Amino acid sequence: MTSGANAERKLDQSISYIKDCLEQTDKIVVFAHHTHIIDGLMDALKEFEPVMVTGSVKNEDRHVAVQTFQNNPKCRVFVGNIKAAGVGLTLTAASHVVFVEAPWSPSDLQQAADRCH
Image (cartoon, rainbow, N blue to C red; front, side, top):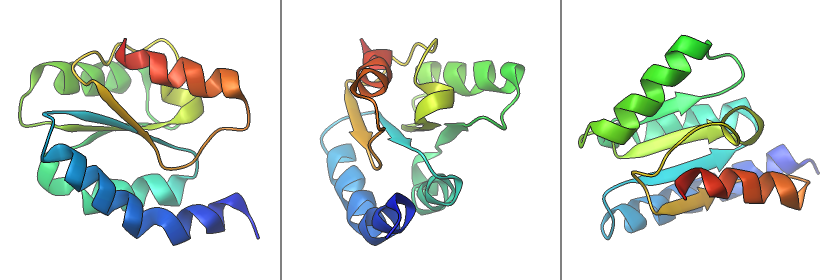
């Protein structure tokens, strides 16, 4: 069984958990690895006006996504690929980070979590 299949099995519970968190906090950062998982998160969380950064997002669009998340109160969710969004971005508008899929490297996990600090 692949890690993508494991993430698919956990996707509904992850979405439910994220929505529960959003009842208690204004903004949240969500990290995943697989594109179809990120797409599923974006679709399921659309009521929170999410933005997304993955490897396919151009640099200027990444900047717009980060600025929207940081400054627009209606944009309550940032969804990022662990590798593409896990370094070099400032996401301090949120104090909560959720990993729907964990990276292989503990340093990648720490780097991604540090986006909110």
